[in-house]
Image (cartoon, rainbow over all chains, first blue to last red; front, side, top):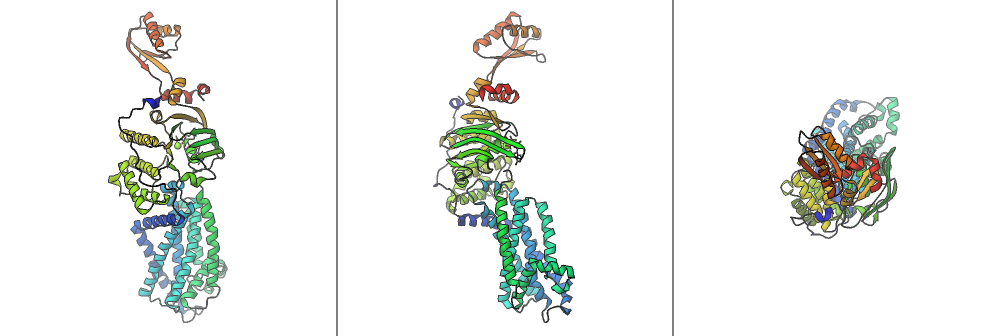
Length: 282
Length: 313
Ligand SMILES: Nc1ncnc2c1ncn2[C@@H]1O[C@H](COP(=O)(O)OP(=O)(O)OP(=O)(O)O)[C@@H](O)[C@H]1O
Ligand SMILES: [Mg+2]
């Protein structure tokens, strides 16, 4: 009855019809659009971008001052300057620090209403995570480039591996960091809380960084830390990066780093996609 | 376009839905009413593939929501209870993003965004980040976002909550326009006038069950009541008047504070009978009003007395 009583003093507003049917873009198109959105929102906050670039510089300054005298010790590799020893490792540790940001970023993203929108669009949800990881990887890559540039210009970083060796070290690091970014993404998709994320990140990060050969040779560590450092994937990553940059023979470092990262990547990717698929209100 | 049978949803011990059946034909509007926590949003989430049902089968636009989710999502539009847009993107940016994800090219997406912004009167704020929008603007942007893909089925979860009257009416007109073009709509609301105006069919949920459904006219006829309200002059005897109406077979409710009484009536002849009965005890009237049945009555009758349900369910 209400129907018949309906009065229409205005003509119904027709939604204009200009396009053919859209039933969901291709994987490539969706990934492109989603990654673009992530990158744009990342550099939307220039303060964040600035501070994340400052961080590696401060580390560079502090560490080269604090541990600089290491190079005079007997157990330090002979004929290697500390800065050349430090920078390849700093690539890895700086990357780990930034990888953490991916987790916090994803939790924030999940609080942003747009993810609820993605869930009712024909969007392939794992692509949202891939986009996140690629954008974060770009951010880390930029930071590492800045680190290398500053190390070269202000601190006289001239590794014996040359430009090629350094580039290889950078690529290896980027791959390792990508797998760590996925670990943090998986944690975020599972925990869905910035606070829990940050505390876990600290819990995981510092032992990873310091119980490794990153800043001092393994032999310089106390005995029990040496044991931890030997099973620490960061040790492999640092070792691989250092060997590439310094032009040493590759040993197990590079293969170990690639292997552990690939396994980590597959595992974390699976967990992340699984956890993210479930809506918070499902 | 929407067929749900025996839909159940449990969150641990909370049984949010207990066997809900609904059906909406193409181009029709279903109004879903229910108090807070009745299960409206839960049902919308299931119909829009966001959350899987614990039991039951659901088909939307011809596809099963659990096994053919992507096909369903390609054909629906959802405006949830809470705005789902990117706060950091502009209104324009949001709409373009959604169009691109749906498969539109760059230029098509831009054109679609522009026309929707115009339709929802957001053109001026188009380039500002949506977090700077007022509540009503964000709601409109949300609605625009759910229309980008020209959905066959539209879900609106309390779409006009927090909107000013002008915007509400404009939104109603937009929905009516979409329906005229063949869009199927499921709308949840707390406002009975909204359901009355937009819905072809009304379903009332309570504690996860359908407790009544029908056209708004039928629900009103069965559950709503017409009432006569009589205000008496100060020197008329209220209790005598109440007695006279009771004697005439009515169920009068006296209101001593206002020196008035009201009684449910069925036919127009009853109204005359009320006046005559009052006349027999010499009660003089200050005012006599007849209240037509409204959905509010239906809703109150349903949600307050469980015995009233049997007839309408
Ligand atoms: N994710 C969840 N976990 C546990 N319980 C839930 C969850 N989502 C909903 N519920 C419960 O299910 C019931 C129905 O909730 P729902 O959100 O569907 O109500 P509603 O009818 O939309 O209410 P409102 O009018 O307040 O929006 C409530 O009792 C609620 O507490
Ligand atoms: Mg709700």
